[in-house]
Length: 561
Image 1: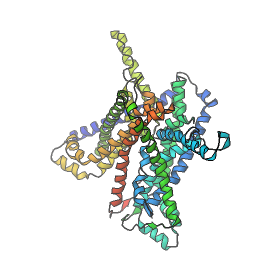
Image 2 (image 1 turned 180 degrees about the vertical axis):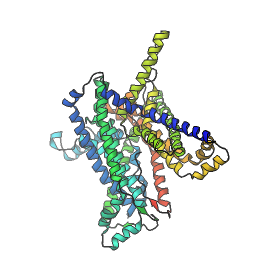
Image 3 (image 1 turned 90 degrees about the vertical axis):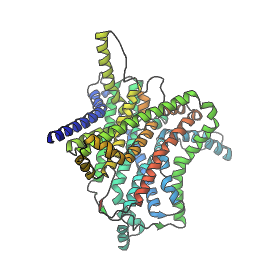
């Protein structure tokens, strides 16, 4: 009996190790290629473009981080702790910009705000201006424009986590601060904000990682960040080793972000009792109510309503022209790729999470954490990492067949949709694994022991007991991965086979050629699909809000891994 248990433990450890090393292969490949390139152009990069890439990335990340911090925390505080007209609408409405890809909102506002756009045309007509020299108008295709566009769609990360943290705070703590003489503003700064700092740090880290990952927006606005540098070095200059070296530079920023996030949460453990039962909202009246309504309303209108109206208008007016067999094929490509990646990610995530539950050893926890590295990697970086091992495999198989059978199969995996699905899986495996781990934690260990006492092995217990109980986590994980894959642009752009398009590449192709009308239908479809996880997130926060927690609980700060 003991031998059987040891054999089962060894099999699960081997399975977890195999999956973890497989999905971590792209990360290891990038480091290998960066340190051993065929042509070392690192000195040339340092002397010419690297400083500009790094400085642009730092300015962009700093600007987006500052704006999302102010808007995300401010809006979360208002809808969680204050009473003003429209608060119930903004509770879920402020999550809607989350559904809009950054490159889509960049195309929309460029179309509206550029010199030939309707806004400047109207201004010239109203004030009688003749040329651009007669007035000043902010340039949308600039660093400031990129910061504004990314901030409009990324602030929900901070808003979502900060709001959850404010909701979970015990009202009696704020009441105590008020009884000691603090004003509402002092109570917010000295009590609520420090308690919410771990969650805010996680949200801000996610914002900065998404900023590092962005390619469509910065490329459209000609902001030369590290992500654009990878693309240019690889495809424009044909140097994969140089691209890997820039990718390693990007990973340094990712490691710094994760470290800062960990440091931000260090020694931040605190305990709350009955977090919702004593919460009272500040009743805003007069001009304060108007400011709160204007602040939240502007975020919702600028981040979701305007893009939806513009895209919807273009899509309806050109529907018959652009709803063609080619478009249906492209939409089908996106759909099938996203479904396949979601299924693979959920399956691997289930095996990792269940293996970690069965074998809660340090080695298994480290391996599962190792498998989540892909989520912290920008899509352009990941594309390089995926290409290297797949190309090596293709060359090895092709060489073997040429030598022994005089047959050439060419690029078997690296030039196929397998490479895209593999990249999606590596990038979003952390999402599915996290959702399933969260569900498995709610299943009491006595269920496992009961199944074992009835003679069920680990696989039978997983199938008969755990799968029905964690189906909500499976569904949530698969839907979020599905939608993320629909929006993913950099990895798809770099790994897609010749002549193969998805909705993301279709939108990028036409919008970057100033053809927003033609790309609107695809962009609108991506936005509508993106609403699915927004609804799930909103309901999840609502459920959390309604919970009555009587037990003393550790403050939950969502972790990156």
